[in-house]
Length: 231
Length: 231
DNA sequence: CGGAAGATATTGTCGGACAATCCGGCGTGA
DNA sequence: TCACGCCGGATTGTCCGACAATATCTTCCG
Image 1 (cartoon, rainbow over the protein chains, first blue to last red):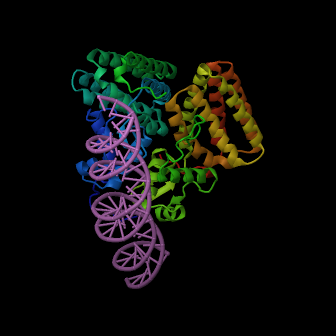
Image 2 (image 1 turned 90 degrees about the vertical axis):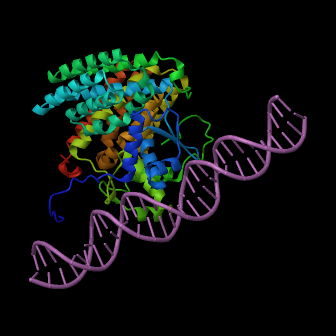
Image 3 (image 1 turned 180 degrees about the horizontal axis):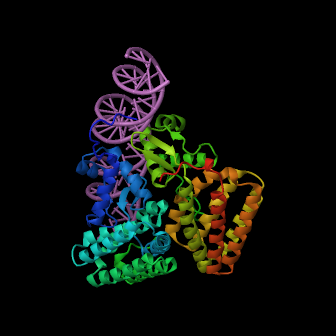
């Protein structure tokens, strides 16, 4: 064991530079800084972030594996843009994964702090609903992550953020009006109520219903919102 | 990984060198060439594969995002080894995803060639059951991929191979005796039967039951097969 | 025998180099 | 005018070497 010496500095640098690049790009996505389909030029990012090209390329590899960007040989990286069927496919998967999350969370809710965390996230959502769109999106992501954590399934924690809720959100963020947010919070309330009552099946059903409603709303959008179908 | 689509394959060279490295490492996993927990040293792989270090590092990034290896800062990459709860978590997720796959495949089975493909994969599995363990595993992966394709959900096609069935298989391959393979084929037969009969719910139930059985078998293994729990 | 100081190995990141490939513009011919 | 093919710049894919930061091994001393 290494000499611990004085006050252990909070290891802020437990993240590699390429991870930081990933974070910054994802944040840019959330902030609407990138448009679906937009190209990401290596030289551009190396300069903007002040890092080497290898670092940017490693970040690209990870973002590609996570489905946030598309990289084609000799043509470079671009923000992935979804066709109508892509959106449908993704939301079908999200439906089952978040459903599983909700069910397991209800079945395994045990530690006392967890109920409080749920309440906190919900109240934060309510506060933000009228305000900033960006922070509301972040908080929403935190809600899903919290469910996965309460569910006690690390694979869900790993997979859920990777499932491109980012992207769906980024591409269709413009549509989430104030009324939609009220509906969303109402849906979440039902899910949370079922979870704290340890009713797994009910929580799963409520969550799936919510995702299906979201999917229906998105599918009603005109073609202009989607990339041309790849089939 | 790819190479399953239509007959026309004009993109023979649509793979970058780092993708080839990924493929070779995954193949090595299937072949039992790597042990869970084993370290992957960059210099070693650069020499063995005759590629540059950046290429190997990019391959690592992707393998890490897919959950096949674990990379920690300044300590390098190693084949991910699963604790008992990791295995449980992964199989819970696999259960819902393959269940969804089976249900959608049953609901959307339409093109006539698909029934034939299902039959072909099944007969190939039966042929291989008594023989090579490696090829059997490959064919098994092809079965799941085929279901996702028939389901017509590209996100499933993208996610399923990433869900580390590889790893579960690599780590617990030794346990899959001949009797287990017969049982597996029987389970698959039921799934296929439900799919060609367009009975979605039934197909999903059969598939989930199969995965649960697999999980139960794995959980019965002694502690020595697992990495020490990370909680 | 334990543990600390030093030596060695490995990784993280940068910068440069070069070939392969893509893309946009230009000229030519119909 | 339009189609087509060629050309040159821009961008990517990959390799190499360099160096600092960190981890791991070795050795020596009390």
